[in-house]
Image 1 (cartoon, rainbow, N blue to C red):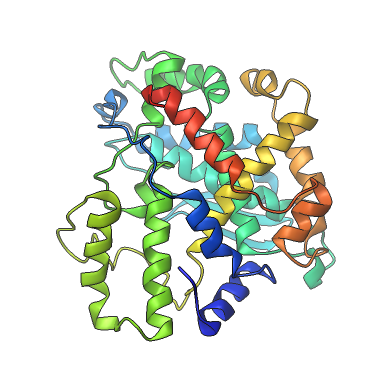
Image 2 (image 1 turned 180 degrees about the vertical axis):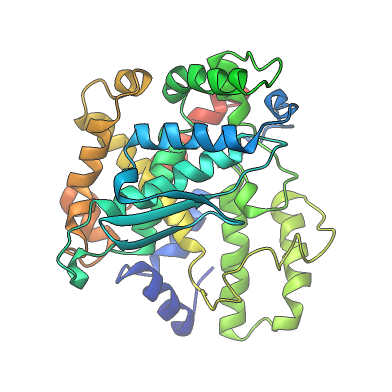
Length: 352
């Protein structure tokens, strides 16, 4: 998984002076085959109803503002693909997308973008490069911290379960009386047959990133022709996820990154996931009774901890590794991410 000087330069642009040579080492460290794959997805029965879009919007706004997104200095809109736009710390806007056939992707998209937005809203206002996000890897860590470690955690659903039930009950969704635990298990279902990166669960998502990393690296190095990308894509999907890709729309053409020349960006998603797991571990050490606060819907201390450790520094530090070393005591360490996945999904699927 080594990469050439040309591809390292593209990674350098996305990671702001972090050492690109560490990326293949980290990927290999994390994803050697392990006998922990669930044999099937637990059926998500909460997706069998029809969920009004306006109710989903209300639910998403209620929860993301409870987490800490400030709508007095931003707004929430709908788009085909969720994104965050920041004009200044006083005007940070997010979008999400909603589907009447299921309710969770819209909520998680809003929380994900809310994580990006809270980072931007907490930066300084000097109008200098110092008061800008350190790197896209750090940015993704903030969105994934809130989406996965908060929004997909059991403590969160002990708080949010009643909110979700009330919203859908009031909107006329019949039979939506699932317990907090049932909702937690439903939103953490694993689907090894999923084709689309943005719809992937957190257990299989890294494999989607690794696939793209390998393809774009080989194209840049000149060992893979652009015309051969679809064939390589389909082969890697079969190898990594045992999935047959029916067409290029659901295969190599599903992302916008390469057409926008965002080559070297995909690894930020996985590096961000690793950083998020590491931050959550240290947040738990510093914030007393963290999980109890989450259950009560009290997120202020979590947001302040992230602001102190990450947000206010902007580009004070030269790299993601330097930020982590100075603020929590060690460089990026993928062991936290691995322990998080093994612990969570080992318990959910009762595998060793």
